[in-house]
Length: 74
Image (cartoon, rainbow, N blue to C red):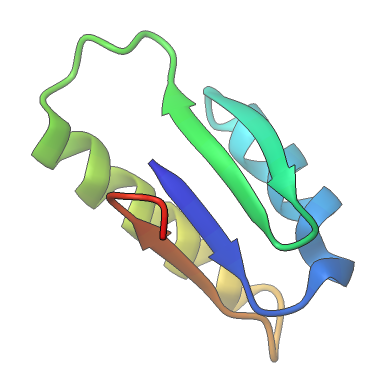
């Protein structure tokens, strides 16, 4: 899955947060990362929901930041 961030100044913090939560993260561009859970044996719909919930929790601690989980890269 991919995550797009509205402000690249938060990218490093989001990467650290998701890695701490057990995700492999690869930077794709200034505002986009590829994300995969470790282990990756979960059902896709469960992975998508879990990642979306983590992003909402991260946003709550980063006022003004917005992250969107995408199933396919645009």
